[in-house]
Length: 152
Image 1 (cartoon, one colour):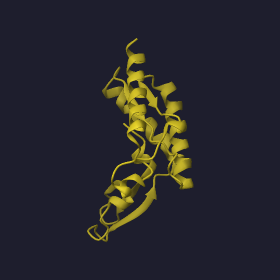
Image 2 (cartoon, rainbow, N blue to C red):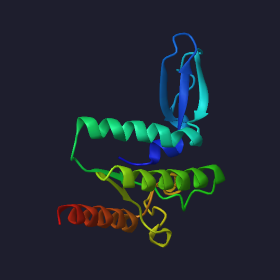
Image 3 (cartoon, rainbow, N blue to C red):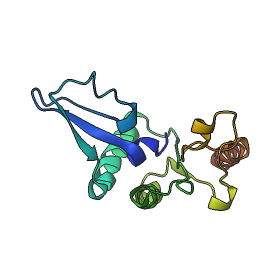
């Protein structure tokens, strides 16, 4: 699992029937969305610890002794302060919960290893959560390292 959803997804509420969904605001076609839906914004940072704790407790009950790898999207390329702060909050929460839930492995790479995407698509390259091939290789290496440590 990874941090992207909690970093950027916003909560949409159907005011008629109280149904809800989370999605990246820009990924939603707002013209197709019923007028009954209201965007409530990002999940509150103050509630993220509780939500993660409940989720990981459920994972522990359903899948005991199964490792869970949590990959942190780097916030280095995002210039928006609220997302930089949110990424740090999520990293802190997961690191703290990984002490409680020993099956939870937190995977992140240092900022100096993060490089902007360099594809032929400039729009893709300019998105802060798209990285270079070398950056993705660093993530893979960290993941492999975590797998090796879990089996030794």
